[in-house]
Image (cartoon, rainbow, N blue to C red; front, side, top):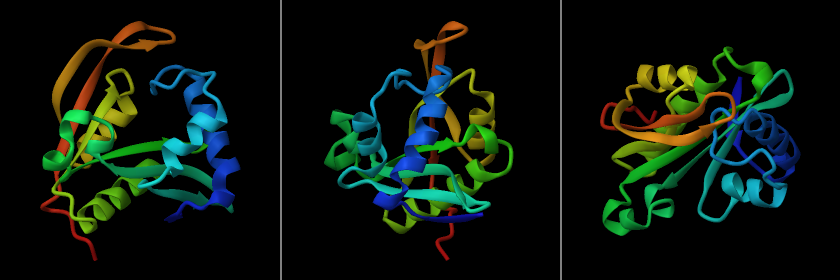
Length: 172
């Protein structure tokens, strides 16, 4: 598996993964009818560091790191030392290590960029593979927002805020 910076030429593959992931209505807040024009800037907009994971000559995942201040207005400037990450893996390639590889990559890139911590603001509690992965990578659940996600199958479910410091992350 290779992880490299995303480029415009990756847009079609990124859009395909984005559509497949949000279509389930089980792990992302984007509605299933999100348009391409809204989706792609989320991963490839100004000030966003994004990468793709490749295996078997195709893109199988995408990830990004942004300052938390771009997402939460009360975390601007004096809270900008905390990064936020987002990850999507092609449903056909789940369970093959792409999420872990991209997670480790983003932790290193966040540390290299000078962030002191990383926080995920919206991890759906019923997305057990994601919760397990982030826990294995050193994240802790630091908050629970009750019934904050409209799960397509389960109705209203909790979301987690997950956080970890980056002081033990090597950038070599």
